Length: 94
Ligand SMILES: [Zn+2]
Image (cartoon, rainbow, N blue to C red):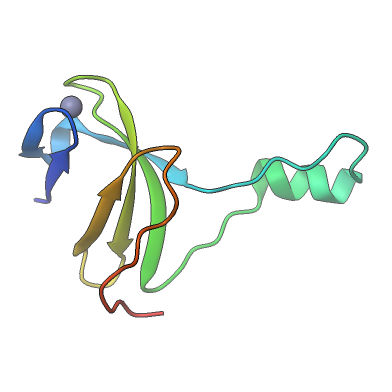
């Protein structure tokens, strides 16, 4: 089981958290095409290696945060705020 460091509560078991999917998805501008809007709503990457994801401490403080995780090893590379830029990460599989 993963142990996740909530920025507000500290280390907790993975069972307390919910993954909200891919993070850093940019909303297209008004007047975008149907294809762009469809991609925004439904298209997600499924990387083998570095994955940038939104997580919520559902059964704790209920706060959202971002996580950089290696999907092969499940190693957590960074945890950072929802509005923070992607931090410089240690080596991860691309
Ligand atoms: Zn928390």
